[in-house]
Image (tube, rainbow, N blue to C red; front, side, top):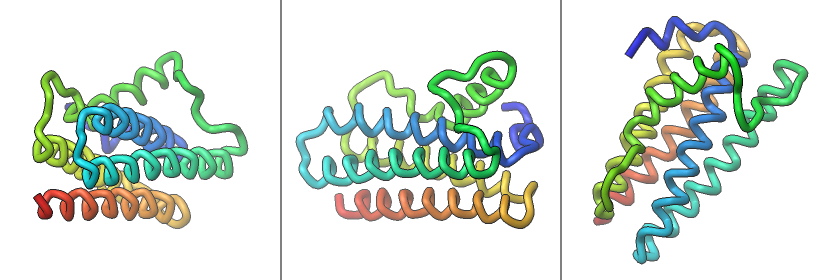
Length: 157
């Protein structure tokens, strides 16, 4: 993994990564919810899908406020697009599943993704100050809440 931390220079790029990670998380949870019959687990996954959608909308709104232009499109092009996709791929690597997961494996995979996302943004936060740092802290708080929810679900097994 190349030095992702020092590759981020603007709050806009931080928010772009956040938006794309929310999309990846939502896609993972949407796929997972169709694979399980357990009502308790489905309830958690549906909640996480809703949260990922809300976070994506929130981060797009923050990006629009900061930049004065609409947030990222459905596809990013050129060198910047490749850069953002590389960052997202590095963080979401744990979501690539090649076989059916047990309930415990699903929860562990989700926890790992949420922890990796939190760690990334926690480290990125050190590069920013003032309002930008506050925006990144908001992202960290949301990811931390997901981890708590998933850990509670794991402990209930």
